[in-house]
Image 1 (tube, rainbow, N blue to C red):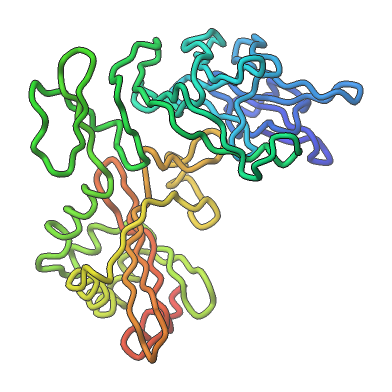
Image 2 (tube, helix red, strand yellow; image 1 turned 135 degrees about the vertical axis):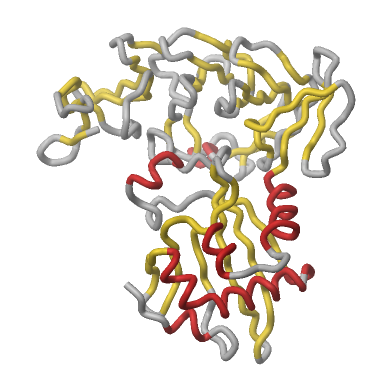
Length: 349
């Protein structure tokens, strides 16, 4: 993506910097990179037109952008969602702009490992309880049933509960349910059991069984990403992992051990990578073409240890990014206290 002179319109260049599409898009055009298919908005003589554009130049899905949280959908694994306004149903286009999944679902997830979840027979519940006002754009789906599909609209699991913690890239198929406590099992339409790792269960097991027993500086350093983002006296900082951990290991070790030994005060949350803190080539693979964190594949598991000092609640935060090689420490935030003052006061650049 590149902009015109006043940054009001966007266009696209190829990898060599050649202009492929002159700046003409605005509004709900969010794709930073154009792989196969994108959602675009164009203003012509005061009229707004929206549609999907393929790499070959095909226009499809006019006035049918799939909008979530005031943002148009982004291509994922060569597919993009669309919304049929006449039926108020969602479907899926492939990379050529052809309908892969017809618009027969209340809502669809994005594609993950060639699969997606679909919601059927649900009802809209408007947040303001008044469907006649403009504010009724905010709503939730209530009831209905969820199914797991492939990208040919074949139902893989007829009774599915996706939640937000399943790792679709960990799919295993069994004749009997998996006994791995980190996995969730579903009876599939082919008679087999499909199991998926649950990110929270996987992280909890890894933290307690792999990271913490005999935690030393070498292990923590090996677990960390190349650079660590941390909150210090001057705000957010970024430091090379060896320098950061070697200077602060005693504090980090104590904080992690206290968290591990006080499970009642420990919480784990599945979050997404912050694009404002984690910028640069080393992080690009963890974001999609629109700059959204791929939290469905690379979630950030945030470990929060809460404790009380002088009647005030204090929290230590450790952020671990799920990568292809496992969990990696990427962020630390430990407020200044008598016990943990060291990490807050350092000033490594």
